[in-house]
Image (cartoon, rainbow, N blue to C red; front, side, top):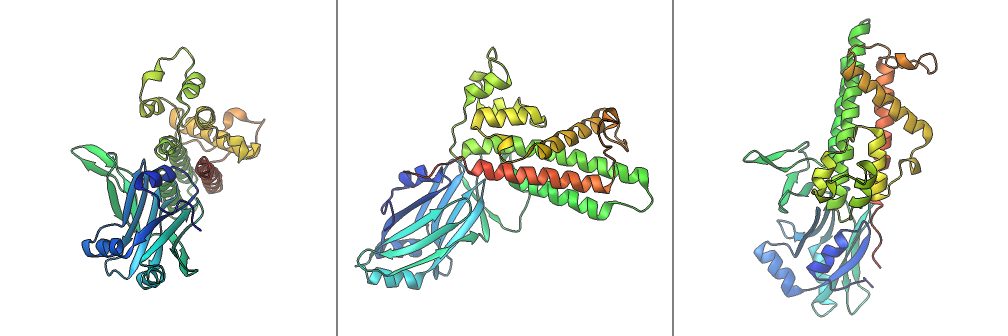
Length: 346
């Protein structure tokens, strides 16, 4: 039997801010007919940056369940209308629609109240994306659209999620690696590598900052006092600022401050999912980026100051690939860790 078998929209909203949930709603044939006839969602709930929609397809042959959050993107599970009608007929025209989600999967079912008859399905990636804009409105975006920024009167209402932005960064630098290097052009190739390092480290900063804010929008309460005390000092006057303004003052390109901020605000410890070798590599490449931007953009050896204590980091294609792999591996692990902050409802 489905837990919470007749939840209100308010109760569903409280579940949306959790990474794992199982619940249900009671529906009647009349409600389903109204939803089909009026072409309106059977249920539609927004909670922070989470979206929950149950709606019939345009041809009314399918009932779709959409669940969307910045962490997981939009996923969909679908039931055949003919199966729903079979269950309703076996249950005095009233049945339970069940749904569940975790960071890895989602499910959708129709369950008779009076017999064992039921139909269920697992969900997957959706053929459309739903997002919540700055003012709480739902935006529907084509699955083929990427890197979307939406402005009205010079004010940004919608931008890509942190993980979408990161994935676009990795896609771009991999394209440069594939197409950008030339045979026997040592200095030119060094400049290509240095550009890639700069882009990847900048992408690291953007992801860390955007995801830090998204987590709050997904229903996790940040420990603002602990964050301000440890990042800015107990004498700071930043407590009175909006959370978004506080985030703007943190240098997320700094490994030290990113690590400190995630730990003190959300309890995420970088060392819990990445070993010391990975973390050292990240920090070394961030130092390389600093040399490129603030000292000389055409360095061919990026850690001259550390020689001979350390092995040289040369500005070549091999280093570019190592940088991409190192940062992408870390960000993907960090992203998974942020989805584990929610708790299973009791």
